[in-house]
Image 1 (tube, rainbow, N blue to C red):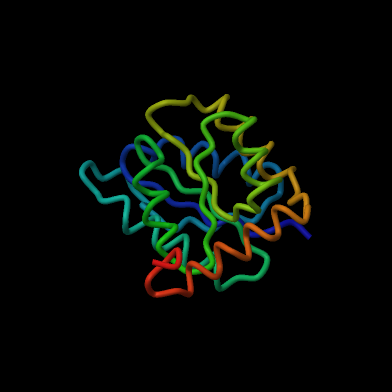
Image 2: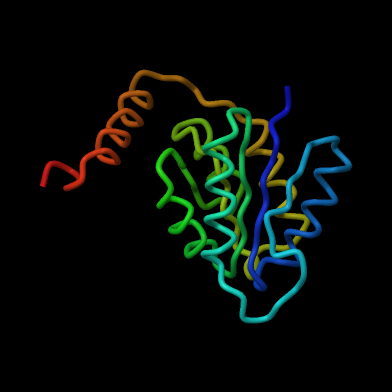
Amino acid sequence: MKPTIYIGADHAGWELKEALEEYLKEKDIRIVDMGNKNLVNGDDYPDFGYAVAKRVVTDENAHGIVICGNAQGICIVANKVRGVRAATGFNTDVAKSAREDDDSNILCLPGRHIDVKEAKKIVDTWLETEFSGEDRHIRRLKRVEEIENDEFGANA
């Protein structure tokens, strides 16, 4: 079963979001657009990153794609939601590693730094890559959960 993809972007990623949405629909992937629905200069990436992240953690078979200018801001906000493992994917190697090693559930793309053709390759790689399940990666992800649940973080 293919996952539902929740997608969101601010003004800096809006055009790329629209292109990826169409591309993924053509591949018969269920897309839910979490905004912005229209190009609004000056809108704020936290609104869309948060909306996608909340849906991803409440939908068992979901993944997310979020886009802002450099991918960093929207990645930061997505990772504020417990259970999210958002990762920037500025090329196919990084996107593959983010899934294979880190079991990322949200892909963060830099709308101002990649074109549609490259973004499609990155998204395809990310969606086609499975988590390796290797012991060392499982151990590390469990540690991330422990830290996430520790109000003081990293045994401070």
